[in-house]
Length: 321
Ligand code: TXA
Ligand code: MG
Image (cartoon, rainbow, N blue to C red; front, side, top):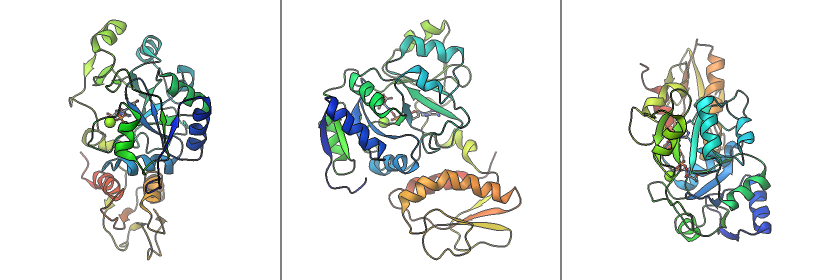
């Protein structure tokens, strides 16, 4: 969707909601209101659509995104809910709370959504337009805030237009968002942990659980990197900017002139396609290597989505603890 001509502003009546859902189903990007901020939505099962979110926002890193679902039942089809997650979902969904929970095997979400992690951030928004869209679309919608990377989160359709006009297919205009700050994020993969303060007060969450929340080792949001790197590093050693494979290596190509590559992230040199394939191909290369061969990765340009791809490759290539 990047470079598309004009972003359509769609009014949030039943017809508009159907139109927005149809765009999502085609793999297009649609901004929509939640009670916290406007989200930039894409089908969370569609690798190319999710890669498009990072391109539209100009995000230099693949940090994990929040997956929006219409209700707890739908959420359970993607993840395991333990006692704490169950309790919090009961008390605060729909609402400004996001739960990070263990992903179910075969959940079918794009690995770009979770940045390759075994957990997923899920949220059931309360905003009637978000609810209507999720019901009409009938699938999981990945959505970070609908602003270019590094800019403040939008709480009105015209804020979204300011930042993303021409870069996304449409905005579902549902007026101003009430809460104005992002959802509170609680990690429920282990001891319940505050990952990001937000729209639901921490005190209310602690009262519901009857215990204080642990605090993340690194204060502030986990923007994927650093602490999480071990989860998405392949077992095989990675060598970057390799214009050919050496003996004992498998070559992961990019663009033309990569004859002999075991796989090619994008034979035509399309960074969106390369981003969509990245996690799948790293995994496949790892399987092909069977722990015996290293992986040599062709150079990826440091432009657009290439920044996020290279960031992730560098983390995967870094020495392991
Ligand atoms: O209010 C909100 O939460 C808005 C609306 C649109 O729902 N969304 C939002 O998304 O703020 P985003 O992408 O800006 O924030 C997602 C954050 C990531 O920065 C990361 O901190 C956390 O969610 N996150 C997502 N998945 C995670 C995971 N598997 N483990 C740990 N943190 C995760
Ligand atoms: Mg944001």
